[in-house]
Image (tube, rainbow, N blue to C red; front, side, top):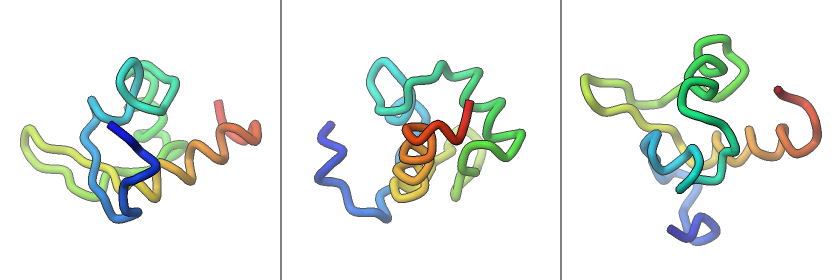
Length: 71
């Protein structure tokens, strides 16, 4: 998946966000722990068997991570 081509409003599932396929260099458990603690963006859609994050929120998190603000 080419993340540069995605619109900011694109919704991404967990498997599209975390490594090895996604851009977030965290394991599933660490990501979900950070979401629960408020350190990572909260999902915008959370239903039974479907949870998604807005690409714009994930990009902002990655920028903060790159600047040393998280983890």
